Image 1 (tube, rainbow, N blue to C red):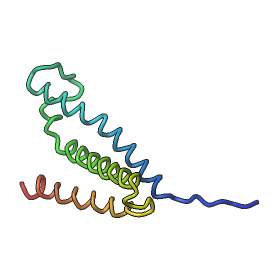
Image 2 (image 1 turned 60 degrees about the horizontal axis):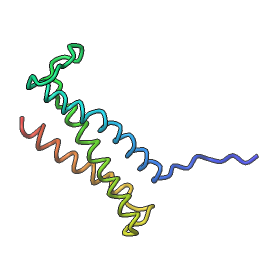
Image 3 (image 1 turned 135 degrees about the vertical axis):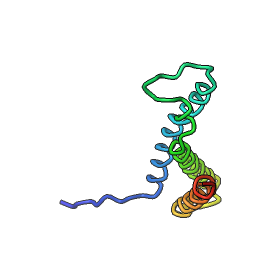
Image 4 (image 1 turned 180 degrees about the horizontal axis):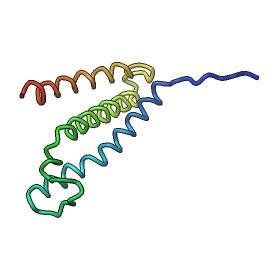
Length: 116
């Protein structure tokens, strides 16, 4: 009996990353918008979530939102470039991830670390 080893394909990880980031965006964007409305007193905000201002101005939510946005956008751009035949599928997985991490690190540094 031949045992087959699991092969980790980069396309699978790119697809999975894009799907997970879509779910994170689907949850965080409405939370960010709703908490902003609640902070202005336009809508009711549940007490069990805490203060609407604290939720809206929470830097951890902002950082996670930025990371999900960059991952989803850059891997989506990678798929578009593959579909048009500009790049090959086996290339640019790690380059895309490196670009996301670099842009994310620069943004977090300038907005959250350097500003303080």
